[in-house]
Amino acid sequence: MALADFTLEDRFVRDEGDVAMSGVQALLRVLLDQLRADKRDGLDNAALVSGYRGSPLGGVDTLMLGNSEELEANNISFMPGLNEDLGATAVWGSQLANRNFEGKYDGVLGMWYGKAPGVDRSGDAIRHANVCGVDPKGGVLLVAGDDPDSKSSTLASESEFALLHFQTPILYPGSVQEVCDFGRIGFELSRYSGLWSALKIVTNVADGYSTIKVGPGRVTVQRPDFEWNGIPWAHTQQDALVGPNAVRQELEIHEGRLVAAEAFIRLNRLNKATVPTSDAKIGIVAAGKTYYDLREALDRMGLTEAELNRRGIRIFKPAVVWPLEPTTIKEFARGLDTIVVVEEKRAFLEMFIREILYATPNAPAIYGKKDQNNDFWFPGHGEMDADVVARKIRPFLADAFGEDAVGPAVKERITIPVTLGTPDTKKQANRTPNFCSGCPHNRSTWVPDGSEAGGGIGCHGMATMTPTRNVKGTTQMGGEGIQWVGASPFVTMEHRFQNIGDGTFHHSGSLAVRQAVAAETNITFKILYNAAVAMTGGQEVDGGMAVPELTRSLDAEGVAKIMVLTH
Image 1 (tube, rainbow, N blue to C red):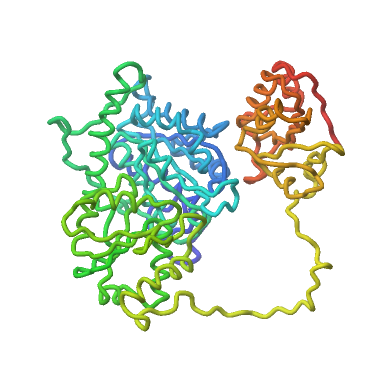
Image 2 (cartoon, rainbow, N blue to C red; image 1 turned 45 degrees about the horizontal axis):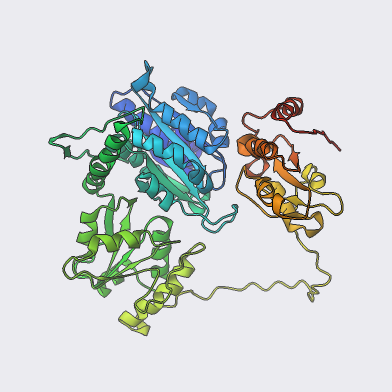
């Protein structure tokens, strides 16, 4: 392809070849490629995308709205959720279009997106939808955005354990290419098994940008000859979980759908040894972004693929981290003395590998979060990168092969001297986080002398970093003010202000106002109205009301006094 032939629009319209895109943009490519594949298979399908913005997936709605012509041409409906769980419920509804109604299409694909706290709060909707099952010609891809280092979140996040609880298979891409590939596989796995498929995307992958390969033959899958109760596998789709239906569906998930998913994973070799050293004694397991961190760390230390083979090291990379297909794990572990599991956050893969290999003859020792001395090893907190992996794994490898056999964990970096004169910390300006010029938050987050306000989710949370504003604390999105409702009967302070953004108010915070009214709590909510969800890109507030309508709504809720202030 000549440079002159390349356009940015190629990322979505080019059928085959090389295209450039970000991890978030790849999500739209997944939908388009799946619909194109369905069309080649004779299916006239459509798709629904719904969820709620939030880092690292804060740009999904902007992406969809900015490509409305492409969406319309491919029967893709984008419907932003007022919050995450309502978005999940809408996606659930898309799977019922052909079951409960006269559908216009052969099948409907569903894609839900949300950051980790949205995964948490949507658990009830997701569990119900997952138990009910998906359209066998549609399927659902649940895109979970994880912020492991809390770069733009109140909590460092990992969604695996929530998704495990929901019983959704979890695919973990480590690159933009894998977002495209695993997303397609996720849809195929969903419609075959009957389960929602989850795609875990961390910040560096969502924000990453790369050139990837696309084409009709890029992703091909096979369906297993799996039987359940003596007949070819087909999941049961329900729409009402009452009485015995829920119990029957639970049985089908445990003994049917998850077993079918494992058969799909095994047949399509989704989990495999990427360095299949035949006579290895040491095995290393890593998935997603951490796999590429591991390979970079090993390469720095001189452990190329050839050297790994020579040293007797085998590496395993699962695309689907749950359910962890047992046959391939047992094949990988055969002949090994030790398995090292490298993963961020809490032990997840390590837990299931240990469960699969427990009590098998000549099972290898398994280490990860703890080493052979039961000391902390790979951190269960924060974000790991190649530097962290290298520093942690090098002593183990040096002990196994000798100090001279392993290069330095972190190569010396070039330091560029910058002279700014003699630093005088007393004269340097403090760069306290602050609001954009012209934003009403600059004035509206102040409180009268002797008063204090509660913090919350959104840009206004930065007010907690400025002591003179006397804004304290934080809460989950939509919980603003309710901590004071619970604390007020037990303290001497008689009144408190509570900041809440208009985006959060329409997401779920309106219920906090209703709760405060019901509890007869003395609180003043300061609804910081700027008509934008500023922290994730300045989008319009979905379902937002203008100020006059908002005041009438608050009056109907029973709020005692309403004031509108401008400056």
